[in-house]
Length: 520
Image (spheres, helix red, strand yellow):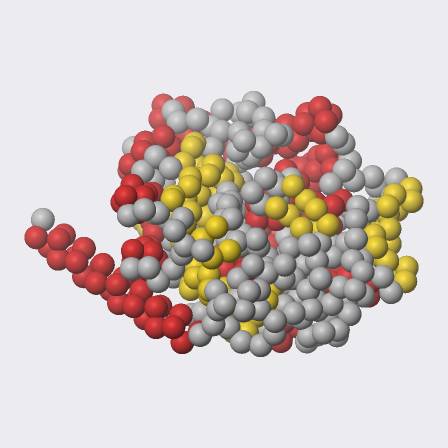
């Protein structure tokens, strides 16, 4: 008990020191610089982000830059992540239908980038070309588009391969930057047409001020936004407790009540973010679906939620969470059943199995490992564990030629791109690095992989009940094959100080949506 107390004191002392350093960094920011401000009164919005990154380009998938870029970059349409509705951003209005497979989109009159140059249709076309280039993970979101061209300076023509029901939702993903901009420069200081522009971008601090050239319908409402990337829970909480920040991303579930008692509002939004289990299907015995299903059925997910996640999650019963309108409980049962899991291993001819469980080092992921390890050992599997940072895990373990890992548990949340089931499912199961290298599905079982791609293509052309039935087929196949499958869907906890901020609404994915937020 004494050693635990000393450990905790040291832990919080470290967090306090980091938070103090953060406060100094924010003080050094000043009130922003350059351009016309929102109010001219030096209003600052200070937020604690839960992730870090060094790539802020328009094609980044990092949680921090995606969340900050929402305020700086624009697509043709804006995705409101509070309810997943879409509205015009760079577009002047809805796409104008020429035919079932051709649409025209006019740009907002007078739209300019923050460097003062005009936004043109060629900029949009160039952004599309970069997003769909070979190797881009964004390409999977636009497979239904045959081509995009500039009809004139301010009109884009989109040609589809087939009718597609969610054109605006997908175009909201496409962030537009100047066509002439250097790709490397955009990663360190992207230029956009949104209500804010960057003045400082880095792993330790990100600063944005109003874009004086913005003429859209969502103008800047503060003079400076300071993002403070604090990956570890303790310094992030310390920054809230000492008043350094006004909004905190990813509040630990264990701190919800305490932070609320200090006058903060903590919202828990059921989300798409999950801890998934991924198998190396190119390595025996994980080339057998029965073995993969055995692992899923061996884990008591509700107990995992109650003990490791403080109740702030729900068991995953399908690839989509139950909140998604296209959810279907799959025909293959993956619920907790130790006896069924044991039988699946036996039927697959597997016994005396020893595996290395590889995870990311996110605190909430690591917190689940002891029970997962115990549950797997209860069905006769010996487990060792190795944790590493996400970038290192993917670069050195899963994204190599002929990976040798056994099983991975990591967090993921593609709902930053929307709640369209095609986005959620294709993120992990499209023709991309996940299926080519990470889990190797399209290498180990190309027939079932191609079957899924066909289902996804068909579902995207349908609406209503027909679409729901087709997406149900996809969820059935994903549960049957269990190449990569969520264990739990986690609630997203976000803290805000109601005495400091106005107009803030939490979202159910990583990142913070700050357009329209003001300081009291």
